[in-house]
Amino acid sequence: MTRIGMVVLLLAGVATAQSFRITPARIGADEVRKDTSKEFAEGFHYGEIEKAYPYVSIKGLRQPPGNNDLISNCKVVVRNGLKTPSVAKFAKVNKPVYSTVGGVYVVSGEVDSQNSYGAMIRSKFWCSSAFQGTAKGGTLYTIFDVYSR
Image 1 (cartoon, helix red, strand yellow):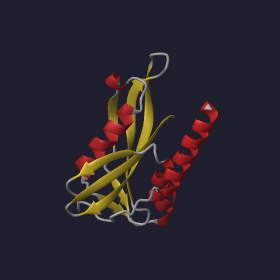
Image 2 (cartoon, one colour):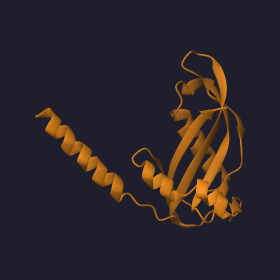
Image 3 (cartoon, one colour):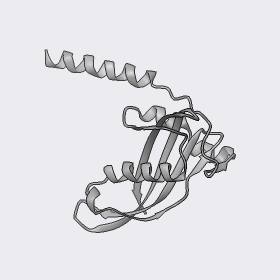
Image 4 (cartoon, helix red, strand yellow):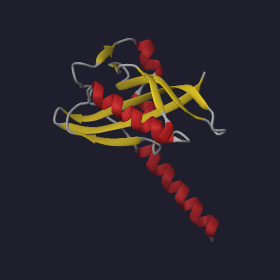
């Protein structure tokens, strides 16, 4: 009986994941640097965020995201994904770049954090965010990755 319940829940989860769609607003604060290259868009595209659902951070905004919104959101998402978030220190955070072709904002940098053995290591990270909404606000969807050199 338990196995049947698990299968039903798994199938329900698959149906939900397949129906998750983002329509990027393709607007943002003027301060965010724009990148129009197709090469950049191949690595960062809002479709990757759709595929990652339900493992996506979701945040409501009252306006299109600016540099500070994107950087602070990325730091929160990365910190929450670390083994020991309380000791994390961001050594370097690059200004966001908006891929006009891919429909995403990308923030990258380096973070010092503890590994499983308690040693401090420096790792690289990136966050990819898509904004869905209008000039009056909307939702920011974010995925991230942290990797060692």
